[in-house]
Image 1 (spheres, rainbow, N blue to C red):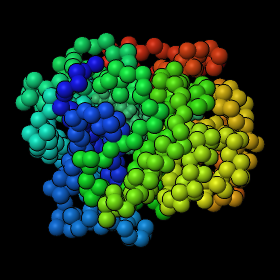
Image 2: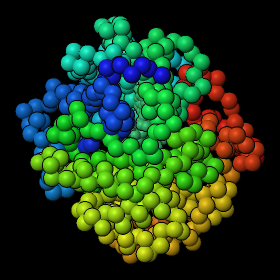
Image 3: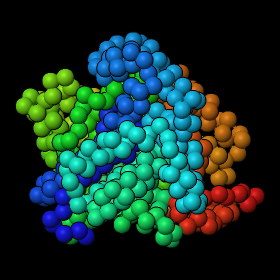
Image 4: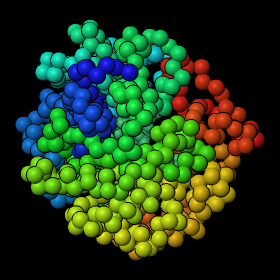
Length: 479
Ligand code: B12
Ligand code: SF4
């Protein structure tokens, strides 16, 4: 707990997606503002990436970035993105091998089993250092905070977060430093190494609201605040012609969290014991639509970027809340577009998907996982291929695009099952029931039911000895 008088500066470290602000500090700022805190936020990621591209680009770079930040046909944006991408590759090959467009030193930070390895990356001078220090100093001198809270959502922001902490410690030694976010919530819960405390005073787990306020009355829905964020700085990177795939890297989305936790919280491979999945709380549909309406209201509109596009970053938007939200959107005649992640739950009937389309839903993403009935049952996904296909048909009829997440190498999965799944998914695409998909290798994580009962899944787990980050576990099949 911190006292009620701090002056708080919340920072997003580099490097993250460039199309829209990552929502962690916005949610914290929104919550803290509503409780009367003196809170400020800056997105250092977008500022740093722009400066890097301008420094190594030519006279056309600024124009290209501006073009990618505005409205333009997809194909033209794709061509412009290719040029920016070439520049990013050139920077990686000639200036700093750790530079990636929306991630820094990600390959080395995916598994940090020894904090010493991270310290080396933090101390190494790279392409981010100068612009990061410049923007950080400007923010520190302007806000004069007593507390700096940094978010670390992904491995690709870890080096940036620690570089910020190092600079603040050195130049503003009285300032209290906190680190939170998705990476911390999943990777650092078992941290026993004391060295990271040279950089941060505290590592904050879970939602973070409880750090600032000793209250049990934290609402189920928090309206993010975008004060301190300049939407004009963000720009699209269009990598494919696929509409759904492009949603992640293009478009200015206000990111909202519809419900807290996952209403199902039973899948064997998922971090269900962690509060961000396991503790489910449902908001009132009205609260969500009030927030959407306030962004879409003409008085709050930024003239160049109307804030009528929303991305729900939930793990699984609950059908019940979706229904209420759609009815409320239609009742108020709000013109909005939105998309987000769901389970292919039988509750998505043709009536509901039609209602969703009418209320502005353009796409959904969801897990079909191993696309095999035996494995769906073993992993406790709560769907069968037949029930999921019915749902996919309902989305197709409503003209809502679908992206499927798929998984291979699940424990006990046979080669024949894997081949069968690939064929099944290809057939779904042929039938127009999914518009895009992504296959990823099964990863065993420490907070999943499988890690708690590996024998049930025919695996032997190698326990991690890491004193710093611990999340993904190595394992072998026992038969
Ligand atoms: C949407 C999403 C994506 C999207 C969009 C990403 C984007 N740039 O916006 C896509 C699909 C692109 C994506 C990609 C990846 N993702 Co992802 N993603 C998510 C997801 C589902 C939601 C993120 C979100 O917007 N949350 C909403 C915000 C408000 O929540 P939050 O960031 O956690 O912040 C809250 C708290 O953590 C806390 N907090 C945060 N910071 C701070 C700081 C302080 C000081 C305090 C006090 C509190 C605090 O307060 C906030 C409000 O409650 C999360 C899981 C989840 N439910 O959060 C995974 C998650 C963040 N992703 C994860 C991963 C691993 C990845 C990838 C690396 C996957 C891959 N192998 O490629 C990539 C990396 C992308 C990159 N740029 O580097 C992991 C990260 C954990 C880890 N092990 O590192 C998560 C947690 C999922 C998981 N359990 O595996 N992702
Ligand atoms: S995998 Fe998705 S649906 Fe399953 S418990 Fe996790 S968040 Fe919920």
